[in-house]
Image (tube, rainbow, N blue to C red; front, side, top):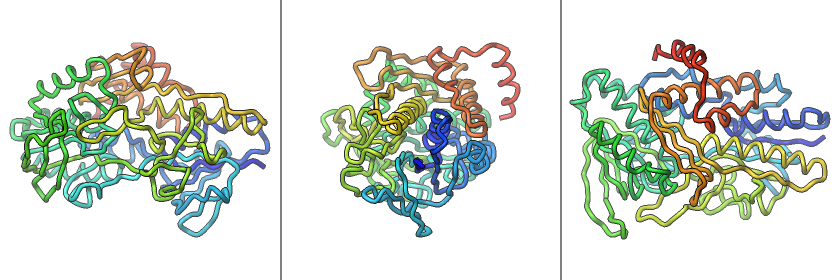
Length: 435
């Protein structure tokens, strides 16, 4: 019996298990197992809403076992200690060893808070990268609204995921405005990007002009080319560089509340394995999502190694969006099926980027086809429809986890620029206006 193991129970891992089961539904001699450090799935893109108490944890979290079982997928909610590719085994923290014929690594990243002294929810700043952190951020947010003061938000050096930082800044502004205390909370956006709207992608369309305008409209100051030196209990020390990488100015930023995105690295279970990962622990893959050294190992999602597009004065990484991850998943499932039938892999992910950034009551969407320039499409628009489309994406993916569906609704609606029927829109709006 062919055993396919998916390491990770997030957006990439759950999608991978369902796609693999659907594509190989006629394969009687195939076993699929998902290994995850958590018994639950949580929808990461909704964490900014949890961070301002617009969502509760239970609204974006799903217990996985019963839903995977319905699709005849085994589930082991135990963290992996180490992958042993030479032995085709995964060692778990409870000392069990799980063998595989094919392994798909979909762990997501390790959050490298240690990269900056004082960074992270165990130190002096908040995080929205995990639902545990977002809950804590929500508690701290209540405290800020009771005792308003300065806010510093953004992304430190080495970050590859900038969208949530912008999103959280705009959502915080909207929540403070609704509470009629925005005038008591000066906000500063601090980012390692060389300019606003770079996003780790060299910009998309007029992302620079649009996002600068959105920040300016909301009286949010910004510092680009910023290296965060250290963070104390209520003060952040930042060095700003010019476009040539020379020190420009040092900033001392007091804050009552701060959320800074951390850099990502690979998880401990794969870190330091020659041929499998790069120096940061991200999994090396070829154009078929397959590791060049171990041909029965594939990888999808944020754990995949992608080289930076360009050298910047302060280091930045390259993001991986939900649409890109679903494309990776579909290609991987077909390629594993090909291998099971004695054929060489032939399916490639599209590596296109579609991103929805909520701003509370409006939002910004951008499309980059392909992700890396030069592009066939570089499109960016804003409006209330993005806010509602982000809510629909949340609904779609939570439904997908519970139903086991692999219907590519996200791709369908995104590429049609969110063409929802008016009746569906109004129904969704009625159900969600309680936020």
